[in-house]
Length: 147
Image (tube, rainbow, N blue to C red):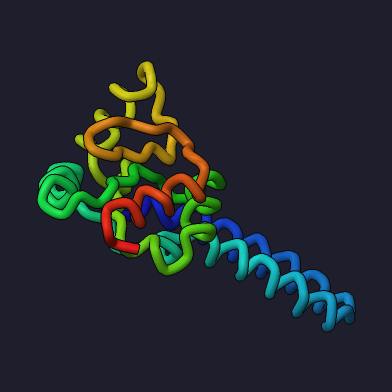
């Protein structure tokens, strides 16, 4: 749980330090702008951006029952963020597994990627697709009658 919040907290702490330094120097507008930018970076890199994660076992069961793809991801991953942002509301139709919270999920990703924890790894009908194009993932959701 804590591991996913380290990067966002570092962004917020750094932003607060830089903003405080600027504010002491009298550059209040710059301080507010810097703080806002770092808060945005913290929010984008936080686990809050992603739908609720489930365990790998639960995701496999749900995927088999509903036909929806499973996305293995981790906080701080720019490619995971890109996928999540480009999917928009459709992201909630997928089953998301945070590999930093789920050792079974991490093992599944390593097995699919020659021992590497390369994410996002999307499983569609049991077949892994590493860092797929978000448009392709949207097509998979639509093809399963969920879009």
